[in-house]
Length: 259
Ligand SMILES: Nc1ncnc2c1ncn2[C@@H]1O[C@H](COP(=O)(O)OP(=O)(O)OP(=O)(O)O)[C@@H](O)[C@H]1O
Ligand SMILES: [Mg+2]
Image (tube, rainbow, N blue to C red; front, side, top):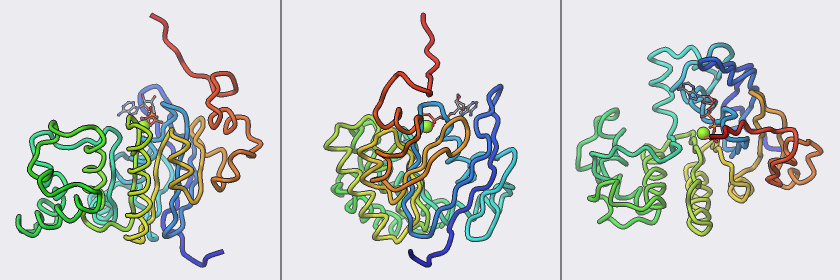
């Protein structure tokens, strides 16, 4: 066992949205330098959990301790602290349509860190190179890129300010299996190069196996299982088994609306 310290500690996190109690007491510890992948059914609250962890959404109850500081109170300074500490790849990439690619990648450097345009552009092009994109791409607009390229740009943006914590929300969804693998490899490589702590969300078991030191499963608002990737086949947990084997029948039921 390593003697590394806890980087993020989530305790008893609750969040209600409209009529739904989405998070019902999330407990999660992430050690410094660890890569944790959270799996779970669509709509189970994975993105909401991540948003509460990064300080984009205020939890109703519970704590998120990052480096000993509870950011769940969601003060202005908590949010600034998390912005400085972390980078995030959003589900669906979420690039700014009206900004060039390099300006998207350098957004935080330009706006929060007040770098010069020249220095920010240089850093943006370095980050684009780290995800395998040529400098010319920097001058394009997001609409001119394929989905796979947009994911790479989003990854470049997440790493641009050398964050200690990286959040990835569905980094490979919607990509072909080869491009998904390219992105997974880039994630593993960049997380290692930064020495960062990473929390990723995915439906994609191949991706989870590739990038995770440990996998945790979210179900009905709580973490119901956690283990190493090679333990997941023998979890002895019916929810995990159903999810890993992709079966419609089982304890997890999906709400299907018929027209
Ligand atoms: N801003 C919001 N306002 C109201 N309800 C929301 C909001 N964001 C999420 N929800 C609801 O919270 C629940 C969980 O949503 P969430 O996006 O976290 O799911 P998810 O696990 O990330 O799903 P997917 O795998 O499809 O991305 C859903 O029922 C969703 O409708
Ligand atoms: Mg989601």
